[in-house]
Image 1 (tube, rainbow, N blue to C red):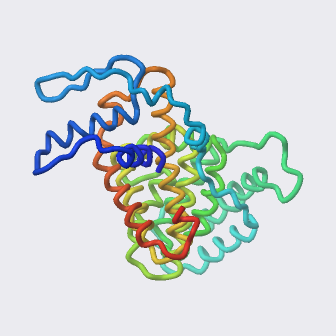
Image 2: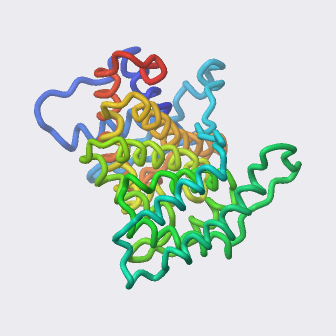
Image 3: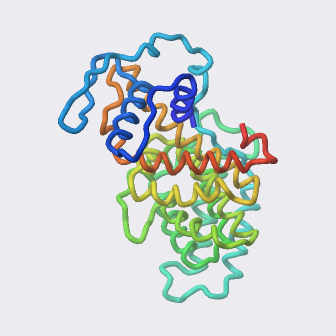
Length: 327
């Protein structure tokens, strides 16, 4: 991950400090100093440490030309492959019709859910991803379309087993290539139970980690790809990095980095990069504008970053067969 790699490279170039014993405050102080040196600001900066303040001038690395590092793209990795829309929707409709345990108390009947798929989702996806002659200006989903679709998705997620849900998730994966979908999802107020498409799918992806079936693997893989596309939306990425949502994303990401299936590991590595890219873009912008990285600008991300980096390092250590992940 780009931001973390900068710190690792810095450590390997020369030894800054050596800690012995279990002095937590000293460790925190040295980490704060290291983070500031990796992401300095152009003016004098004060770090509050216990009852004292330390004055640190801008780090000279800001004046060193590093074209190779600066050329590394922080664009999100997205999954844009478009399957046959009709085939995916036909598969989902078939799975809905074959489900024998659809409760009568459900907010939507099978007929109503199939109607949303055929009359709302299909026309939107056809217009967004035509088989030929794509329009110069792609149509965007309206809040009415997304609200209707999301409500039906909640019903399907509640009533269908995880093995039957990956076609639904794959349609939302395509939808998140539309910037308006990310913005709409980010604008929704959190609800209990969850009602936005990302939050609806995450709990089942977490539970599926313990289910060694092909259907569970397909569901996890598709959710990971959906999350990659979701993180390409700046407002939604910021929301997904907030406490509760971040916890659920991490609960899918970390086990997937160590998954037995190489394709799942590749998708999870892409998601890890996309999350790092979101943070790195914000840090670069802070340095570019002269604001610098403030002590509280990333809130409670410290422990979480350690958890994710630890999982990535373990995944790299285990990786034997996939060069794409290993790089």
